[in-house]
Structure formats: C-alpha cells, structure tokens
Amino acid sequence: MTMLAVLAAVFFTLTLLAVPIAIALGVAALIIVAVWGMPGFILAQKMVNGIDSFPLLAVPFFILAALVMNSGGITTRVVDLFSSALGRVRGSSGVVNVGTNVFLAGISGSAVADASASGALLIPEMRKQGYSGGFAAALTAGAAVIGPIIPPSIPLVIYGVIAQVSITKLFVGAYIPGLLIASALIAYVMLYAKRHDLPARGRQSWGVIGRQFKGSAWALSMPLLLIVGAKGGLFTVTELGAVLVLYAIFIGWIIHREFKWRQFPAMLTDAGLQTANIMLVVAVSSFIAYLVVVHGIPRDIQNLLHGAELSPWEFLLIVNLVFLVAGMFLDSTPATIILVPIFLPAATSFGIDPTHFGLVIVLNLMVGLIHPPLGLNLLITQSIAKVPMRDVIWASLPIVGIVLVVLLIITFVPQTVLWLPHAMGM
Image 1 (tube, rainbow, N blue to C red):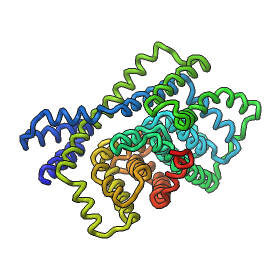
Image 2 (image 1 turned 90 degrees about the horizontal axis):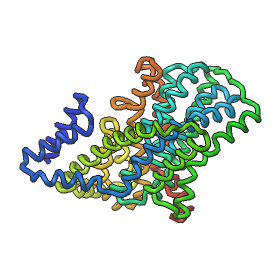
Image 3 (image 1 turned 180 degrees about the horizontal axis):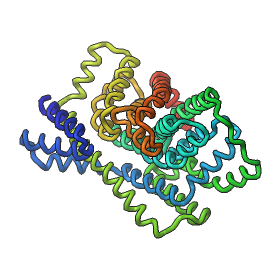
Image 4 (image 1 turned 135 degrees about the vertical axis):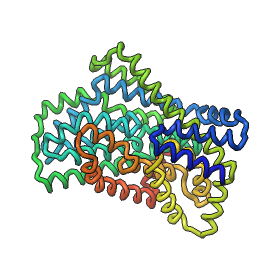
C-alpha cells in the first residue's frame, strides 16, 4: 500500500504542475521501479503487453477517418442539411449543434475532437442567432460528450480490451444511451430558446433540402456500417475502422471531389501523433494496473463491499461516485485501465453485466470533460467562443445535470444498454 500511496502522490503532484498525463504516469512508474528495486524488465514487459492488442488497432483508424471526413467536406454538408431542415425551429442552431455532434459521434469516437470540429462551425452561428457565448460554448462541450458514447468509441474500445468484453456488443449497447443524451439536450435547447425568445431563421424550400440531403446521403450512411457489419459478421471492430477510412476517402475524393491526396501525409502524421499519445498512456497505465492487481486491491475491494452487504444498486451508486471523482482529475484512458481491474471483479460478483458496467463507467468519465477542474471540452469551446470561463461554467451546470440524469437512468435501468444487443442476438 505504501508503494501505491507514493505512486499516487507523485502522479498527482506532477499533474498539478501541468505535466502531461503520460509523462506523469511514466515518471511515477520509474520512481517505483527505482525505489523498490523492481527489475526494469517488468516495467517494459507490462507496457508492451498493455498495447499488444489487436482491437487497439481500431484507434488510429477512427482518428484518421475523422480527419479525412473534415478534409473531404463531409461534416460541412451535414451541418448545412441540418440547418436547412430545422430552420423553422426557434433557435435552430442549438438543435443543429446537438444533431451535428450525434453525427460526428458516429465517426470520430473522441469527445475532444468533436468539440473542436463542431465548435468551430457552430458556436459563431449560435451567437448570430442570439445565444450567449457562454451557452453556445457549454452546449457544444456537452453535446460533444456524445462522441465517445455513440460508436465508434475509443474509450469503449479500451474498456473492451481491459475487461475482455465484446467491443461490438458495447458499441451496439451504446446507441440508446447516446440518443437519450441527445434527446434530453435538444429538449433543453428548445426550452431555452423559447424562454429567451430566440428567433426562428426559417426553413429552406423542399428543393434546397432535397439537394442537400442528396449531397450528404453518403455521409449519413456511414454510422450504418457498424450495425450492418456487426449483424452480418462482415468485419470486426478493428476492420470497421479501416472500412470507415476507405469509405471517407471514397466520399471525399470520388463523390464530393474535395479530398486532396497531397493533404493525406499530414493527416497520417496527425493521426499517428494522436495515437502515440493514447498508446503511451495505455502502456504506462497498464503497468500501474499490474501493481494494483499484484497488491491484491481488487480482492480487498470485493471483500470490503460484500462485507458491507451492499445490494447491486448500492454498489453501482458507489461506482458512480468513484468514477465521477476520478473523471474530475484523470483522463478516461488511465482511469479506465487502472480502476476497471479493481471494480470489475466486484461488479461480476454482484451479477452486473460487464457490457452494462462498461457504459456506466465510460459515461461517468465523460462527465469530467464538462466540469472543472479537468473540463477539457469546456477549455476548448471557451477558447473558440472567447468568453470568460465563469460564463461557460455557469451555463454548463444544467447540461451537467442533464447528463447525470441520463447516467442514473442507464445505471438503474440496465435494459437501456442491454436491450438492443439482445434484440440483435448478441
């Protein structure tokens, strides 16, 4: 326990000094190896084993697919379609914001990437329609949380690898929770627009909408690849990532004629750098998780919880509290890798389905992106909106509340996660 206490102290000290997560974890691990005289090869071995996983190959493909989409004009066309079709809705740009993030969620798998892409496109438009800068930034940050929920999802891939759960089943189970968040946010935006008497811009003619739908139909079909592929057994999740890249190139190059091959090397470099950052965190976190398991922490936690004679619902409530706090200070990747081995054995002993448990964990960790002190989505959208952070935080409070309500629903109504996979025979 002393070793783990030192590790935690070093990590949080470095994090408070703004050292990147991967470096902070790595330095903490090296100190443990040096002070406790552990063989250095164990650190190297566990780091390599942590990333030696075929499903993790999906991560660079998902990132690259999102980069190709943005380059090929796909995202812009979808935004234009939503804007034209919803023009008669009061304060329509807010609804378009949520809808765009639902679409982006079906491609990138990253909340931060979606916040950046949708924020740059839609925050200025929302402000033109009369939304405050703080609300526009907060809504964009909150809607981008849908990114890692609706598949493909990088956090769900990492959870599936750690928990040895079917990633395809996790993906299919995530659709209803993601759509619940989107529906709740849309309802909130419409109430906000009505309360503040925001104007309706006016819907375009059916002819214009038809032409825009035709132009974006290929892009809108991309999320269907997962369902068709999963049900038909056409490809694995990793292969899905490669298919998404090829499909995005086909749409951008052949259909829209906006994708430029000269930009592709830069996209590969960007995707490689983002993947390297994620994999470094995965590798070092895997060593930390090894230390946690070796010290018997999962067994001790399981004995403690069963000794307290908790019900499964009380256990899930404790898990929610633990992961909400973890999400305030940790990125989702190290939090998942370190904490899942601690709590998953106890969850299984309580009869909780690992797929259900995974969605609860991922949504908990995503909440940390829209409130301090981490609040990475808020930082991104605040920099785009160029408003004081206090305005963004204040406007984000109802949005955080909405996401927490959905979290409680999926926590205590497991069928919101499990019904669709069961219906598809998974």
